[in-house]
Structures are given as structure tokens and as C-alpha cells.
Image 1: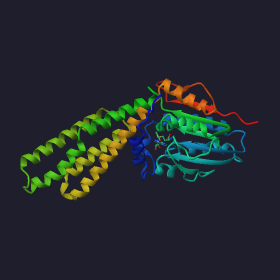
Image 2 (image 1 turned 135 degrees about the vertical axis):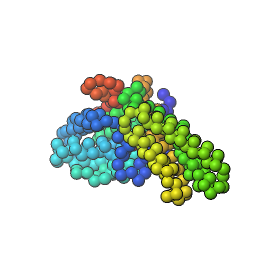
Image 3 (image 1 turned 90 degrees about the vertical axis):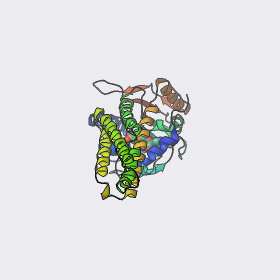
Image 4 (image 1 turned 180 degrees about the vertical axis):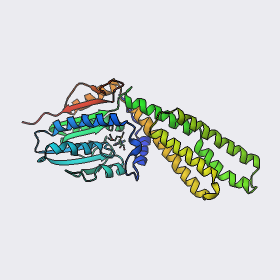
Length: 333
Ligand SMILES: C[S@@+](CC[C@H](N)C(=O)[O-])C[C@H]1O[C@@H](n2cnc3c(N)ncnc32)[C@H](O)[C@@H]1O
């Protein structure tokens, strides 16, 4: 059941995404209602998982900014005497930095790691959790997650689902970003920034200057059409801002140093590519029924009792939000 993740390019895109980020605003690809539904779902799962324990050790794998860690903190409010040892793990150091920030009840220890190779002992944690994360590290991450579940412990993950709501949303975003990349907006803008001052100084012909301006206008129009046809959301806002900033800079080139504009445009190109990569990675790791069976088999091989595969669905229907993968290791004695 081959590796469904192009981990190198994708890990790079995720690391770039988290670098220097204070919050993952562009990560909010879900609408508020879906976000609230997911929170309610985890709240129930976590309250049940924490019930009856005096202490618990847990990890959130591919934690991002620690959404699940924050939900553990909320769920723990029901159990004031519970002692919690938490770990927040992600391949991106900047994500882990956010996730491991102090909470009301605990401060998660940071673990910067590929989920396929975790620096944790066998059977060492009571709760092994993940939300839309484990699948990025490929099938081996499910074996690895199973390996670290302690006796009496539980694994619970929401996993991207083939044909699901996230795949649908990411496909639309990837299409918009792909159209902007293909329009060559940023290369055309870079040509413009370099060529127009030369045309003004008479170093290149007026025709060359005009051709360069026409090419930029065309790229701006193509990108604006793509944004106009896209659904509201962070990707459309991102593209609209980029178009506006390019138009503003093109309108007053004299107000900027060429080198500064070129550096800014290189940064924008990197952002756009990484954003596109993240979206295509979410599509690629959306697991089919057969791949989900493989994940279940891997958890079973690690010695866990695995629940039947199920999907998480919004109450009023629509494509599933995720696969739900749940498994437990029998208590000792
Ligand atoms: C879609 S985000 C989910 C983040 C978080 N769990 C949430 O629900 O908000 C996927 C996360 O997986 C992380 N990631 C990608 N590849 C990884 C890998 N090979 N090992 C560990 N984390 C990885 C990314 O840095 C990112 O934080």
C-alpha cells in the first residue's frame, strides 16, 4: 500500500508555513461551523479518554499550532485533580514552539520529529492523538503511533479522507493558486520592476517597456479573474492582496528600491508555491478505503484492538470531514 506522501517537498512547505508564524491564519481553511463541530467532537472524545484517570501521559502528533493540545487543556477542566504530562510533536520546529506554549493545566514538551520516526519508547504514552496530521508522514507513521501506545492506552486520530470535505476545499484552493502561478504574475512583475526604469532612462526601447507592461497587465487580469471566480476564504484573500500590492507597487515604482521590490517578490513567490504545495499535499494524503484498511492493519500489528473504520460527518450531511481511527491497547494484568 505504497507511500502516499511526497514527504520531502511537503515537509519543506510545512516548515516554511510555520516559520516565524504567530498563528496559522491561512490554516483556517475550515469555516467556523466546521471548526466548532470538530472542537465539540474532540471535547467528547477527550473527556471520555481522561475520565477515571489520576494521571495521563499524551502526545499530539503533527500538532501544528497545538489545536488538539488546547482541547485537552479544555477537557481537563472537568478533572481538576488529573495530572497531565503532554508532548506536542511536529516536523516543523516553529509549529512545535507554538503548540508547546503554556496552557492552564500544563505545558506540553516539544518534540520536533517526523511522525514516521518518533524518539519515544515503546508503549510509553496513554493517549496518542492526531488531527489531520499523521498521514503526512506516510503509512509508517501509523505503525509508529501504535508502537508508543501504553497498556490500557488509546490511539485516536482524524485522518484526511479521499473524496472528503477537506479534499474538496483544498482542490478549489489549489486550482486558484495554480492559476496564479501559471499566469506568471510574479515573474512578469519582476520583469516590470527591472525593465520600466530602464525604459524611462532610455536604456531599453519604449517597445520593450510596453511589452513588459502588457505582459504584467495580462497576468494581473488572469489572476484577478481566477480570484473573482473563487470561493471566499484565505486563498482568495491572499491572491487579492498580492494583486493589490503588485498594482500599488507598479503604480509608483519610483517610491521603492528595485532590490527591495525584487526581494519582496521572491518572498511572495515562495509563499505562493508553499501554499500551493500544502494544498496539494492535503489532497495527496486524503486516504482511500483501502489505505485506511492498511492503517488499521498497522495498528493491529502493533498489538492494538482497532475499531472498524468510520467517518466523521457533519449533522446535515455533505462529504465526510475525516476518517476516524480509534484503537486501544489492552491493560496489563
Ligand atoms: C494540516 S496540518 C494539521 C495541524 C494540526 N494537527 C491541526 O489540526 O491544526 C498538518 C501538520 O503536519 C505537519 N507535518 C507534515 N509532515 C509531517 C511529518 N512528516 N511529520 C510530522 N509532522 C508533519 C505539518 O507541519 C502540519 O503542522
